[in-house]
Image (cartoon, rainbow, N blue to C red):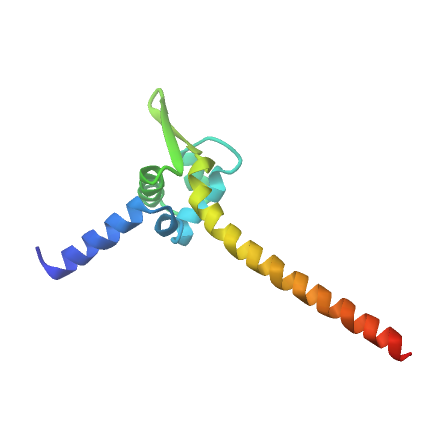
Length: 123
């Protein structure tokens, strides 16, 4: 296997096995955004986005492989919908940062209240 093919295989496997890498691509986030309103066929997603049908299908496959999207057949069409439960690892990771931000904001709020109290004592 040549080095470029090996590098591509490594990057591909990490993208398709990890929610974080899968949503790291702006186009895949656009596809997820297009599905927020509900189940859609590939053609409807193509109409919503400025991507070709093969591009949308490629991104849907990656999102399906990590569990963020589910597909069902209806006649000849394939309908895709979000599986938001699989965003839980992302939610848990972001919750740590939300707590840290809230702690900082609480400290700033406390500092501002102390400054206001101190300024009131000087007047």
